[in-house]
Image (cartoon, rainbow, N blue to C red; front, side, top):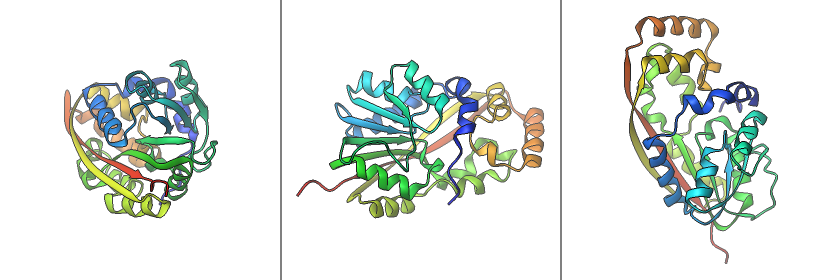
Length: 249
């Protein structure tokens, strides 16, 4: 497993994070699956890796949850606080909360950045009996479909080493103490402009770009600038996973 990503990269991209990842119908579709499968409505919820706070804010406003949130990036936490989110700087492998404090925890597109065994064990620690951990992560079974891999050939292997597949997630959640694990797949069609695609690449808006060898990044950017179509249509494939603690005996 690769080392957890440093917070500095997210500090750098915090200012444009929401602009480059707009909330759209796909975002809300995933939100609804997390709320339903994780039974987040009305719950005491911890968001681990909250970023700019959009999910935590939506859980409070739409699902009437009481939400606490952490992120390793101070800049991300500052933006979450500006939305009124109860956020603080913290690490997923050393959660600053007492045992059994939450009904549920949620991780959206963050698991690949963490020391997974430690983070999952910590999530289990802060959950009450029958507590739920809801996870949304990209499905590595579809990494040959990544839209920018055509210009950066190392991407499928780099991300394949970071994102856990279904079998790995089941095994690691069980080892962390989750007695019941449920997995769903969600595929979504996406369309972005060529200009938006180039903006993502130039700003290194995805953590994958930080891992590319400099020569490959430079060559891929040049190719993308020469070849990017006016519109890019592609599919994105989620694993939506919920682990449940055993109920109190």
